[in-house]
Image (cartoon, rainbow, N blue to C red; front, top):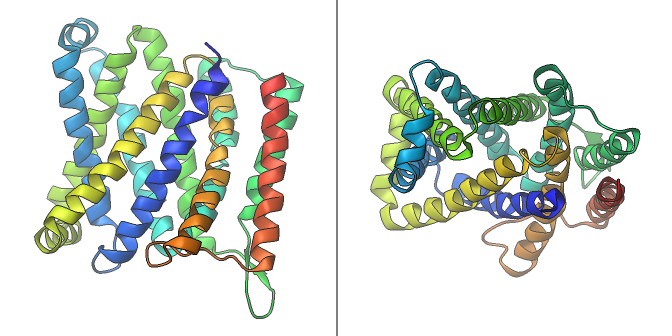
Length: 309
């Protein structure tokens, strides 16, 4: 099985999830917070964990014990906090810009993979990865319409960089614990249970999160459940595929392939802007189109050499 064709599926699903999350945050989240979407996402992980337990009960029980189950929760904790900071940045910035900055995750994964998994990359893989990251970097700058100035929103950048670090650490530890224990399903079960535990902790300890969540489900019940259900389906499916792909190739390479999410998110955003502007609006001036097309070309060139190596 070629790892590249498995890994490329994850960013497609995550791109759709990103636009769903952006739409929900823009249209339905109250008080300027991200509590409702974050809690929906983490609570959905409980449903996924229960489904896994029903389907693979014997395997999960066989590979779970008191000694290792706490370790298996750690990737879930990292994933949940990474999701929180990702939503914080998505609340105030365009989807394509957030996703572009998120592509620094492979850089973190490279060092973490070396420390925890003894994974190394070839020179061509490193150069190809740097090319992809350069393309993502081009997209990280916001060109102002009127004066043509280039600026960076440092608050948003800090949130997304922290998110990228946490997600990279999640992937590395997920692979390490899965190899150690030998059960992909068991690791997946405990990871999503860990995500739910963080979400429930926020719900119980944060009044603002509870208020945001309750307000959302009482004012837009059916619509918000459907939208969040579809969004979380894409998110979990992408995560499942990405986790599986890390077992086939170095984690840093899988996260580099995830940079395709930049291109997919931008393309979907352009299509929505042109045909469904009441849902999502991206900047499509000549300056912005040139900037983003250039970045996508650089990303695709790097990915081509990554695949050939």
